[in-house]
Amino acid sequence: MIVKSVLAVLVSYLLGSFSFSYWLARILKRGDIRQQGSGNAGATNMLRVVGKGPAAAVFVLDALKGMAAVGVAALLGVGPAATMMSGVAAIIGHNWPIFLGFRGGKGIATTIGVMVPLAFLAALVSGVAAILAIIISRYVSLGSLIFAAALPVMIAVFDYPTPYIYISLLVTLMAFMRHAANIKRLMKGTESKIGTAKK
Image (cartoon, rainbow, N blue to C red; front, side):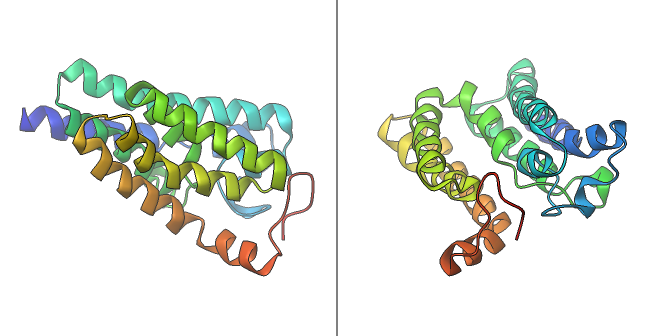
């Protein structure tokens, strides 16, 4: 079981390390997405730099690789903790991809992909709160932070396996780490809103 768990985590990290925003921007001849806009390899920066269609594609694909990581763990028949860690590994891969010099995205779409099959109700409630926050404030970063912060709480409320609660705290921590600059701008009132240029 230990060997299978390690294998699931390693494969999931490699899955997460494939950056769809980077390669799609390259295919569309838009250069390195990490050198433009916010410098982030994710759907929000794709929206600002490339457009709605590519951004939507990146969001879906990033979420799917999170689901794929959970699928790998399920195929290998590992336990709840190892399954959750496989999901976390995919998020780590997205944020710090081995194929791109460990410079990736912020992991929210991949987190959604991990959480939907593992803790659907928790992901749903957290997602609704995030969407409402984005609609009201027009800050994608605020919605992302609300989603990440709500996950462990909702996982506990809906009584999912205990390992999910503790490991989801790691997911929340990573999200806040990756959004550190956004948090500072939100506090200063200088964060960019949807439809405006990146500050």
